[in-house]
Image 1 (spheres, chains in turn cyan, blue):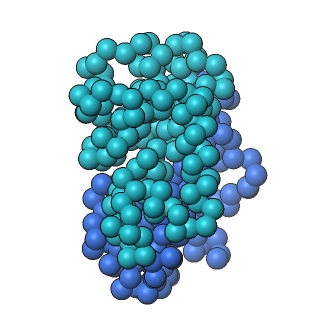
Image 2 (cartoon, rainbow over the protein chains, first blue to last red):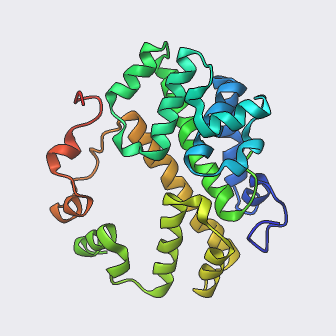
Amino acid sequence: MSRLRTVTGKSLEDLLSAAPGALEADTAMRRLLIEQLTPRLYSLIGVVVAGGLGCERFVEALRGPLDHDLAAQAAGDWRALEFTAAEKAVLAYAEKGTVDEASVRKRDVDELRAAGLSDKEVLLVATAIAYHNYAIRMAAAFDVAPG
Amino acid sequence: MAVEEVAKVISNWREADLDDHEKAMLSFTEKFTLTPSQITDTDIESLRAAGFGDEQILAIGLGAGYRNWVDRIADLLGVEETKFDFPEEILNAFGVTREQLKASLYQDDR
């Protein structure tokens, strides 16, 4: 049961179903990001955002296709792990965009481009970072599992 | 809301001329934004004690979540705010100059 008496489930979907339109919007956004970014990159961004917010308890719910240990380590210190140059650039952007978003500058976007990301991919990555920052906060506030 | 009141809310909402209902909402919103992992049942109970029902509490969460989403995209992509001509009091409350506000991510080379 969530922290709201009117929501009996334990997932973000259960919570959002109590707000007309919210679940549909959330589901559409999540599907789009997973399809266009790949499930792996979407999940990697999620676990790094969770780590940045001190919400490591959600890593299991966010890990998707990622190995359990990899996801847990990525939430703690993704720099200690082996990733492609593009993944490293995305995770650095996700970390900064979570813990110190006001300090993001053009050079951070340039790092993504240098790693091979197109403008559309930069937009999708930024949207995924922002989405996870929203969804994980909702999950933490109402004690439900993020999707 | 007058410009001076908005500036006060931005710089220090606890000292602003807000009622207990509004202050309870902003206290939750601040924690939701800065330290979401530290939210407990007590924070939700504080909203209930201030008179909010479950539906309103969920709406507060969604509102705070939405702002965290949209403002983050703006920060990440350097979206320039050109729609509003912010008064001096608001800029001061945020601690930025008009020149800094105009310098978008894609115009400067910081």
